[in-house]
Length: 130
Picture 1: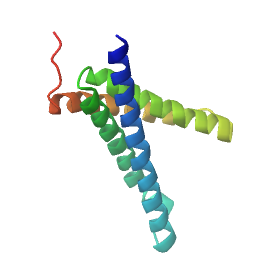
Picture 2: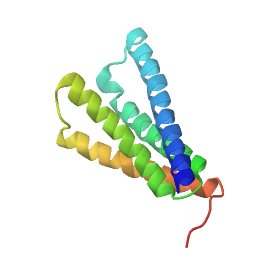
Picture 3: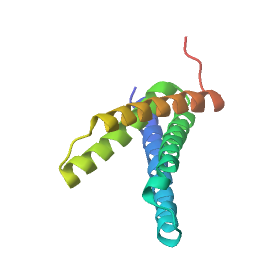
């Protein structure tokens, strides 16, 4: 129904917004660390990757918790929208497509957001569907 679609759309938007807020805060933190310490970009690569996966998991979790049903769909949609925004930014801004490594990362991001969505529905006491 239309009401259910609005609820799911709102949940996905909420999750996607959460991902980008976490990404912006983490980017600011990492840029300050790089600027004012002796750290190099290569030394924080692992931490950036971990924060990326955590933000996708949290975004999926938030969308699943907000939607309260079909967590894998909500989380997957959240991850897919994130990937689409990053792809468009890279394609339109830098005129380059995803590399094979980026495709693998973004596939894993979507799966991570799906897992977050499933857990978000279960932790929020969402409806059980048979």
